[in-house]
Image 1: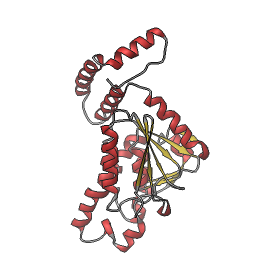
Image 2 (image 1 turned 180 degrees about the vertical axis):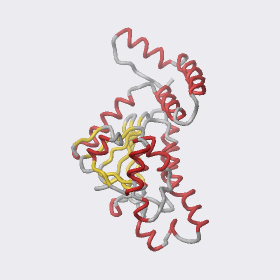
Image 3 (image 1 turned 120 degrees about the vertical axis):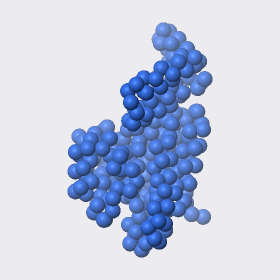
Image 4 (image 1 turned 180 degrees about the horizontal axis):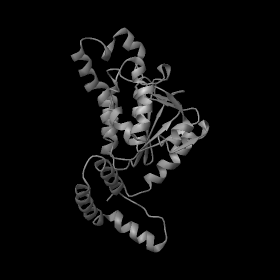
Length: 267
């Protein structure tokens, strides 16, 4: 049986997603990838007990992006006439990206090694990123004669700014973890052996928040990337009205006054 391209493990309130193709440096774009990521996202979103996600890669890489060998051989999603390739992107690579983007809970990318091309863009889908000191990052599409075909031209400028995104896209340069941190691509760099522990520590802090307002806050942040200030103000008022009527809000206020740790039930 072929191993799943994506592993989902739930421990307490934290889910860990592991891209699972270590032999190909976690290359993505096979036919089964879109459905695997979509199924994982649906499972996470449907479970209010899951409050944070860690995304990482198996083996030595986070993800080397698309499968270059398959591109050379015009195989799988990269074969056939242009219309078939476009459809392959819609149903495959784009489904990976849209599935991760649709996650309702905070996602931390624990970048354990190279995050190149699509792999870099997948990391950019996370709400925050922690890098191993072994990690490297690159938006190297032009180096193989392609455009950023998976949403990277929208994602990367929003993470590191237009000028630095342009530098990465137009040169194809690869940067190390420390440079990525200076540019704001990652929030911190940690020793490789500490990466998952640090990611889990951060995930646990996020998972300690009331689950419904945690999801609503992520939605407000996402909507704020593309909508107007007035629309966000309206959404904020409506979501706040809902939050005021939750049991978790009452518990949070009581715990604050009583100087104790709150216990949230997602109600």
